[in-house]
Every structure is written in C-alpha cells, then in structure tokens.
Amino acid sequence: MAVPVARGADELRFKNGDRLTGTVIEQTGELIRFRHAALGEVRIATAEAEVVELSATPPESLAGLPPLTEPAPAVPPAASPAIKPAAMVASGARPDTSRWRGKIEFGFKQESGATDSVDFSLRGDTERKIGRNQYRATGRLLYGEKNDRKSADRYDASFRWRRDFEDDFFSQALTTYLSDQIKAIDASYEQNIGVGYRVLNRDRHIVNAGVGATGQYRQAVGSDPNVQLLAEFFEDYTYKINGRFTLTQNSLVRWSDETTGPFADGRQNYKLQFDAALQGRFTDRLSLNLRFEHEFDNSVVKQDARTDQRITSSLGYAF
Image 1: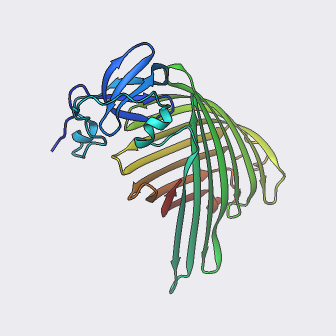
Image 2: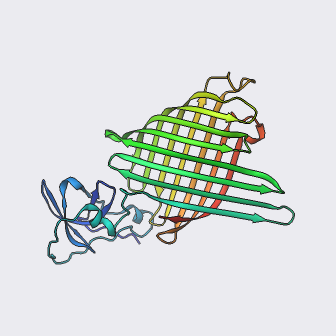
Image 3: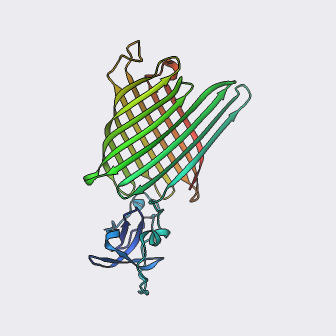
C-alpha cells in the first residue's frame, strides 16, 4: 500500500549534503526553525541550509516500496535548543559528506577438480564533498590463475576531482594508473581534463555526461614508451532503488586519429569501457556487491587480450 507523505512535509538540505525531513515552523532571512520527529525543534542559520517542499507522494510509494523517511507527526512545541552546527544536527539523518567516506570490497573464488582455478579481487574507494568540490579515489587489484597459468594480474588506481558550476555544469580532472601483465602493459599513466553536464539530478536518479581530452603515457612490454592525446566521452548513472539497494553504471570512450607511433600496423588507439554494479546493504557497514565489467582496448598488442570481461561478487565493508 502507498504511504503518502503528510501535507506540509519539508526537507532541510544542508550545504554538506545532509538532509532532515520534518516541518518548517518559521523561516526568516537569518534563521530557520524546523521541527524533526526525533530531534524536536532545531534552529539553523539560513546560510547553512535550504528548505525544499516534498511531493505529496514519495517515489518509494509509487514503486510499492516503504518510504525512506517517515512523515513528521504533529507534536507539542518543545523548548527551543540553541543553534547547532549542521553536522551535529544531521548526525541522526544521513552521513556527513564533508569527511572522507568509503568502502572496501573483497571477492574470492576457488575451484578444483577437472579445472584448478583461483580468482581474487580487492577494491577500495573513498570520496568526499567540500562545497562545490567532489573528490573520489579508487584502487583495484585483480589476480587469477587457471591450471597453474595466470589468467589475471592487474593493478589500477584513479583520483577524480569534480567542481560544480551554475546550471548543473561541472569540470573534471581524472588521473589514472594501470599495470596489467596479461595485456603486456608495464605501466600506463593517463591524465584527463574535461567538462560535464548533470543531465538528471533527483533524489533517486543522477545522470552525468561530458567530454574531454586525455594525455596517455604507456610503457608496454617489448616496445618503447610512447605518448598520445585522445578525445574522450564519459557518462555515469546512479539509481537509488530504495534505502538498501543502489545501482551504479559508468562508461567511457577514448580514441585517437593518430595511427603512427607505437602501432606499426596502422591500428588506431581507442578504448571502450562499460561498468555496472548492484549494491545491497544488509547493515549500515556490510554490503553484498555484484559487478559487471567490460573493456576493449585496441592499443593492446596481444589481440586475444584486448577484450576483458568479468562478473564478480564481493563482500563490502563501509567506513
């Protein structure tokens, strides 16, 4: 059954990303008096937050799911506490995005008998938002053996900085490192600079897309180091299915018209990548993650190693 939000329900949105659902008592140019079901009446400086009127029917109800937040019941006025910092008031609502938060995922698979194989994956990511700036760092280790032969041996890491501008535009700087022995890549460093647009920005759906340029320095087995400039298109999508499940997806296309340099056979340097992940949280800290990853890199010398596709499941711990 759909559970409607009570009329007059409001959401208090802080600059650091935190949110509270309740009812506005009074709002002036300097102060917001707000009533929350658990915290009672709180007072917030107008410069620290904004008030958004909620829809009469939450999106969870439209999907047949329980609401993420309960409507604030009418309660007698309580004694007004002193003005509190936003981070303190919102500690009982959503995580404070003004500090580093992240997750570590561990996956393992072992098989013996007709085929002896082992696959190991370790992934970590952390992010932080400060004002208009969003920072994210990721790292990944993939290792596998099949019948005493390596099937995966990859290390990669990245650091992304996005800065928001007006009208949903943002700039992006992405630095990446890659080492993959199966693809015969000793080291690959890439620096991307681009601009993007937030195509959709709702409570449950966020879509970003953009273009940019990437400088690539690569040291491959059996060849001299080379430098190339590639054009890039990127896209990412986040869907908060409900309070427990989240779907994320991102893709990119990089290409260069240059056919000289490291490619004696005239091949073009281009890369296609598509990743998707479904996260299911069964506690505030622990989650089960299912990932699909597909990558095609035409610059790899070994033709049978240009395509890399995997489906992995892992256990995650948030911090």
